[in-house]
Length: 395
Image (cartoon, rainbow, N blue to C red; front, side, top):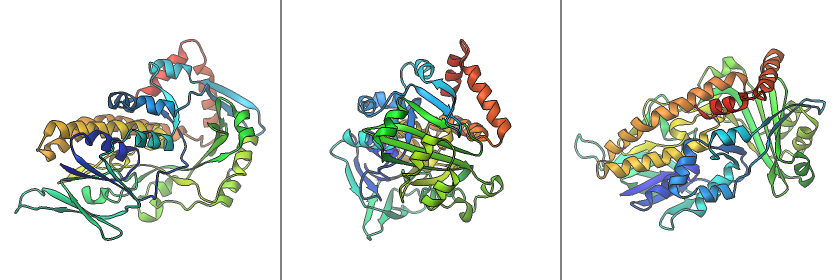
């Protein structure tokens, strides 16, 4: 079977890895090469088990990092609390580490079978069905690229992210993202001195409305991340004006997040002109496939950064899709139905977890901040840390 994958990110590369032994796979990625930047994520859950079965976990772990935990800091530079990562690792049976999202992509590239036709700078602009047989189901699908090239295949898989250009076609009325009430920015830069000072603990600010993170990212780099609450009334709407991607504005970023913590201020001074800047959002759709076009990864079920499992679900979901297609043989549509039936409950649980955590991701007021500080102290009590860790790992 010929398979065209739109999107060469984590979901697309994971799927190509799994489909390549049995199918002719072409991956179309709009960017000119592997994407840099990004932020640190915690890798655990279903994606970890899938990576073990796929034979890629050692490559990913070699690119990851084991932090000691998180320390919380106030605007005057004082430390206001700590959480150790040890109980999380223990609760996950050792299947837990941190890794930069771009390193996940590079790890997948390193393990990608040579038979995969990976094309960078290939931007898909249209997808439509082909091979229609009378009033029956389509047997093929066609992808048109920005340069006019057309690729026809037995199956098109859209792994083009939360802002998928294909989702509206698969599920009309559900193409737009569902904002979660936050805007997030992140970047990496070289700062060996601050990296050494930060050490093996991530720094998170104990602040209201806006939160900053700084962490040592390896090789003398520092990662910085910023989150702010945005108007709830605005995010309740899902029209184009309220869901379009923000334009990075370094001066605005430095102005809005100044004063959260002295070390975060140092990282903020190095904000580049271009950096990751987007709304925290989910993708929610009642169906993942239509004919010979199917959604996967964030295009189908982005859980949002709040759930902490986007990368894990992208890898595990790709494996689930490949497994269902393999079991279905020539009955492709049946395989797509089975993929959604089996995988959707896991996705729904992760998305629910993301929605639950939205209210306290960044405290809205001092009362919420105080509640979080008390909860952190409670977690350090005997037995409480393991209970909290297990609760965190379970969607």
